[in-house]
Image (cartoon, rainbow, N blue to C red):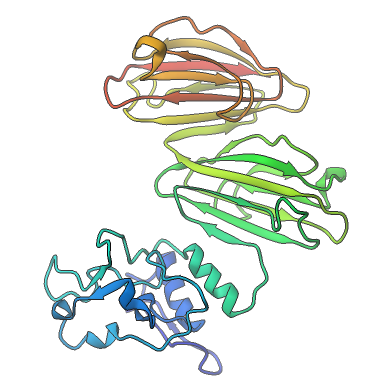
Length: 358
């Protein structure tokens, strides 16, 4: 079974993690949090305001796992999404009968083991007095910014934001960007990785100065954003937002091909896809449609394609295009292009294939 002592007990300390059942990241973090001194979330002193314990459904002899403690809650709210929270059916004596019911809304999910929640991270930082700016961003969409934004960020910062979505890709946009400029961005910089660690492929190498920054699409469900500042000049920093998307990619090669999902087979229903093309400064991007067949509708309100002269959905666009109409060749005015594709809940067709060069 998975187990750990609560808090430090002195000397080297064992944490029990069996090979089958305890090797998921969330399970490991759960037990490590016990070693750091954290109790189960549903054992908090204020838990009765947030969950109801169904004592009659608990396996005989396991009621002790559902006790309430006189806990120090660090001034932070109850967290249904905590990696320290039991699941609704843990230790249930009867299949389908929950042992824990969230109140007042019983549909709130509990018991996730995907990893630390934002509040889990906040609790660790507060208990151990960590004055750091790093966090995990597990929601389908959200925003984050440099410390103190829009006031200047502090010197000697070293921050990481891990964006993590469920079974989808990540579309990241920067609404504002202003960092100290330096040669090769060796002083203050932002760097973005296509994965969950600094060993992941680099999606955007060290970037500094004033914006604009390109939007970026991760190839998977995690993206790591790194921000660092040195001991001297600062600036206002940055603000960014993200959301999950069904499909898309970031292209940096001087030429390539973009296709709708499943091309030349029919594209799937209910998709939102974003492809970002980034060229070096001074290089314009040219696009040419090679094949195009989408569901037709008046004003293209169902399935459609947009080409943005820039990397954000708010950038100027040509289109929307649908049906089999001719899509004119396109040349950007700058070094970013965003190709945006949407399909609705009915009718699928082969879609499109287009090439680009810069």
